[in-house]
Image (tube, rainbow, N blue to C red):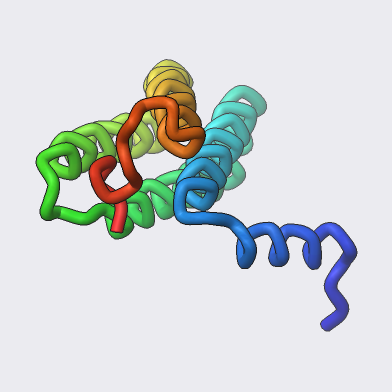
Length: 132
């Protein structure tokens, strides 16, 4: 199967990204799929909503899997990620937009925090931030 230039670019971006950049890319993906879930609910396309909310949940599961549980911050991140999963599941079951909007708000805050970690302006290493 032929890949489009965009698909080739995406694959190259993932393969050459640092650990921190990958985390940010995961947040961006979760945000994008959550927004698509909102769109699905708003137009009563529940199949689209379900599909995209499940993708956002899968990304959050990947974020959980990426944690190094040897650091206290990882325990806090797991709690946050579990809460985000709860919001997305609740939204999917109830076909409600507000829990998704709350999840997106938290994801945006976390993404910005990770951008600071990647820049090094927090003085915290990736390990100290709880990523393996």
